[in-house]
Image (cartoon, rainbow, N blue to C red; front, side):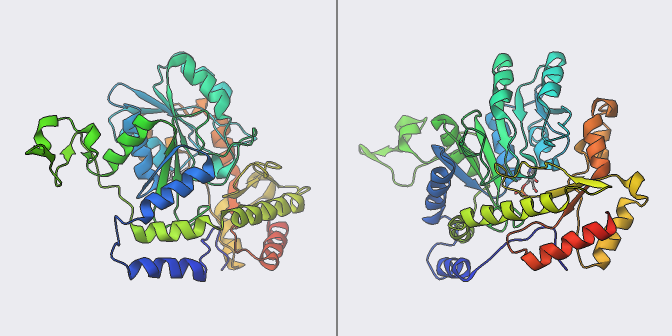
Length: 389
Ligand SMILES: Cc1ncc(COP(=O)(O)O)c(C=O)c1O
């Protein structure tokens, strides 16, 4: 079977993990901060905080954005549910703008319309499939209403904006959150990172990741509590706010560091593969690539085809079965968040999201990952031509 996405693990990765397993620190060892510095260096941000998952990171970003009852997060309906849930964890509300049909990212025009009717406190642009949103334009809108921006870059580690800065540099946002789940650009098992250029945000993230505990003497609130005979007490720390255990392990960071060394070749190969698909599918009757010819900035996490199923004369379920019989796994990214039962209860108006539903009704992701061989890709192309044409 050829999966739609997959990690790449080599001997160096395995050795790096085994080295930690034989060391004294499985959890809070030295590799956490090394991994964080390397991520900061790579994306060009001042600070990084690694956490147990992108979902955990989005939750923390939402807390930092002071989301709570009565406040609204604006995001895209074409994303994984974790983006929309991040503000719900804090008791706030999530509202949605429609997508842009060519990028499959949140539409700038739709954001403008939604913002006219709603007081929005935070915006979470999602770099769908690794293609960067125009965060510069989103910031212009956000600044007018004082909204915070946290980017959901689960798909976009290794992607760049059109001015050459990397996704994660937070040039136009307050925070960026990545996922290192195995199908993503690099893998740590479960895992993720938040980047920021703001020291206060960074220090709060460090506390929130670890139960709300403050260990830096300079930041202690009860200044008189940690001295005995004028010497600071070595065991002292303070819980200053409600936090979580979102700590990632040294074992995972060893894998992440080893994977990070290969990021350039991972992204280069994904770009090559995506461009080859674009070329091969240029003149098909019943389908066209989503995010066509936008491969050079994208980290190319996904390769999605938009298929006209009416013209094709078969259902998506049948087509997926046919691909499966040909040993190819396909997937749908994503069921619109607003059409899940949990969100249906909130009564979003489907008619406000025509592009989202048009896209959803046509989308099918085909295999794209670093280890996909030329031979496998040619086979997938042949099958697409045969089954969709
Ligand atoms: C767009 C998006 N955001 C957030 C997440 C959550 O990432 P994680 O699995 O690391 O929590 C995912 C996971 O696939 C995702 O696709």
